[in-house]
Each structure stands twice: as C-alpha cells, then as structure tokens.
Length: 113
Length: 111
Image (cartoon, rainbow over the protein chains, first blue to last red):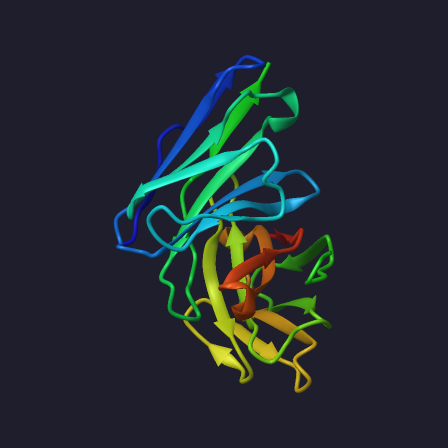
C-alpha cells in the first residue's frame, strides 16, 4: 500500500516562529503537493513539485516555502508563522503519468497563537 | 476561480442510491475528472476518475455528460460509512497535472 506520512498530526506554535512540516512518501512518486484546508474554502494548493529540487507555486504560496532535496521527501516551511496560517495542512503525492491518482497523508493541524 | 461547482450538502437514506452532481463547464478536452472523499479526521481518498466514458469500480460509478460539462458520482447503496465530504476535481494536464479542488459536498446518510 502507498503510504504518505506527515511528521506531526498536531502542532502549536507561536507567532513569528519558523515551522517545518515534513512529508514522506514510499511509492517513488515524482509529484508531491502541499495543500491547506479551511472550513468553507476546501483544499487550496500551496506548492507542488515534479522532481527533486523543482518546485512550482500553487494558488496561495505567500508566506510559505518548500524544499525537496530527496524524491521521497517534501517539506513545507513557514518562515515566520502568523495566526492566519492556522489550518489543516495536507501533503499528497502521485505519479507523473496521467491520470495520476493522488495519495494523501492524514494531515497536520497547525495552530499559531 | 472555481473550476468545479457542487452542492454544499446532500442527504440520503441508508441502502438507497446516491447521485452526487458536479458542474465543470470550463473543462478542456484533456482534463480528467476525479472524485475523492474525505472522512472525518482523515486525508482525502481516491474514489474514481474518468475522461470521456462512464466508469465503474468497486466503490462507485461515474457518469460523464456527453459535452463533459458535468458529471455525477453514483453510490449504488449508501451505507453509514459513506458519510463524508465528496470532492469533484479537475486534473488539468496543461498545467502539469494540477488538481483543482472545489469545496465539496457533505453527504449525510440517514439510518
């Protein structure tokens, strides 16, 4: 079975802290994605990556950066956390070949105080 | 700029069929239609996908309109475990297989 593992299910951070959210997949997928999910807004794409060291901005990249140094690992970084970044963060991966079914992790709920 | 439109919520009686509609009027010829569902406290999981023809799998059926501007996810016999938020998504090949999620339909199954 494909497994996408997110490092933390729940985090509480303070405003201004640097936050790292880690995601690891074990299926040799080329594509990896970070979404945030907020009530009434559905899932919104923050960043995605097609290959190691490659990244593309999604719909809401402001305030975030990403790192993909190894194929299986995709990290989301909040350089200076703010309260409006309190949210559920979901990582996903897929093969590049169309149609590319997405496999999601269980999510990381971040609260910024 | 939402690419899919779904009703916010629907209800169904247990063991009855459920038809979940989705409009995607801006779909292009190479876009795939995907459906995912999200159970409480979990990440979304794949249900089914299609391009032009109707599709069936063990979880559901997908009926795609002839003009591809709408589709319907069909759960043949709803169970309590099918209560979830269902997302109709376009996978846009032209933008590198990006998935565009809408806000989904929250399905309540009544015993």
